[in-house]
Amino acid sequence: EVQLLESGGGLVKPGGSLRLSCSASGFTFNSYSLNWVRQAPGKGLEWVSSISSRSNYIDYADSVKGRFTISRDNAKNSLFLQMHSLRVEDTAVYYCARELNGRSAIFDSWGQGTLVTVAS
Amino acid sequence: EIVMTQSPATLSVSPGERVTLSCRASQNINVNVAWYQQRPGQAPRLLVYGASTRATGTPARFTGSGSGTEFTLTINSLQSEDFAVYYCQHYNNLPPLYNFGQGTKLEIQ
Image 1 (cartoon, each protein chain N blue to C red):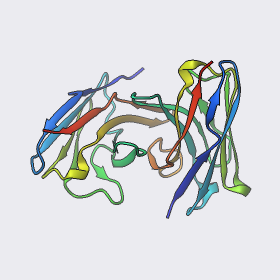
Image 2: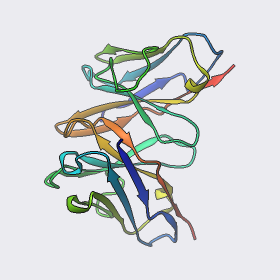
Image 3: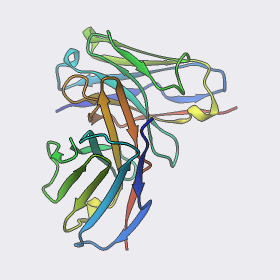
């Protein structure tokens, strides 16, 4: 069974930093592209960032470009999102999501999410 | 940028009914559409991709259709667990695109 488990969320002040992690199991981790997708309270889904299986393709939404960094450790089946210069509008549940079939941009498995709250 | 517009925002229906959710793209996107279901307090779940291909585990009562700019998700014989928010997504891998619609909430009438 595919499992994705996010951690690292919490309360942080504007301008602060936070590092999210996603631990994966139940599939061949180094064969899949992975993503972070977020959802602000009561709002819809917003894609944040993507990383290919070997980290050779990385993309960011314009809203986080230059502030967030996605990375992965295939030896430890883990995905990360380093977030700097956090803003109130970054407040959201952050989901780790696996892409179906390589770089399909179709999200076939999701974690349960970790809540990031940016407030003073 | 391709904009995905879902309608209506909220749909009130009764269990056992059939319902059709709509998603419109601002330009031709062939069949590069996926549908997701999000129950309250849960993560999204992939239902359909390629406009009409059911994902593993998606019940047969869910049917996706459409191409170009108009897409629909039809749910036959609504079950209690189907009351949720549904999102359509335009996807593309070259260049990577991940645009979601704003969602349609299906609520019990």
